[in-house]
Image 1 (cartoon, rainbow, N blue to C red):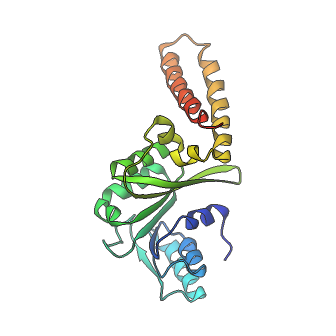
Image 2: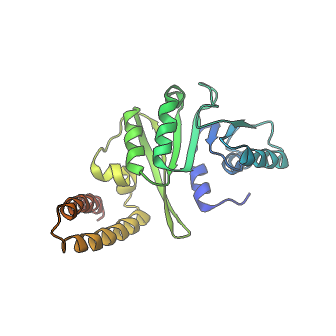
Length: 229
């Protein structure tokens, strides 16, 4: 089946034969994995009935009903401990992903891997991963339709690189000197430099505080860029 480059990248990080897709929408990720022969069992979970009905139709059309089950519910709440080994939580805000993990901590910690792709607040998600005693063992970036997407696989263990640069931009990406991340870093650096230039023209306390924040961000970008040879 034909799915977006981003969803292919998400599916490509799944290594286990059983998985739950949280916020499955139309069920594309589990269907793609099933078609590729990569999974034996999947739970396609969504909070909304409409997308879940569409997922059911797609599952029936592929004849995958023996392997993929749909469940209505929020986050990981429809998933029980021991049912699956992997969970995909992608295409939503970072703070929502953090909330999903925290509200179902027992289930989350019972999993062998999480595949996460937050739309923003990546630092908050990475910090939550570390706080749960998980580490990011693989991270990839995809650029699609002018947007940057971070996708990372988390497994039980201790993160080996806990620095501001790895928190905000991803230790595995920095180790690989990922070219898409370099592009994102360069774009962000230019944006922050432009904002800083404007703030330096102001003498207000508020501008000074904002400038300090921007300069901190620029320092982290500089730290990240130092990984590139």
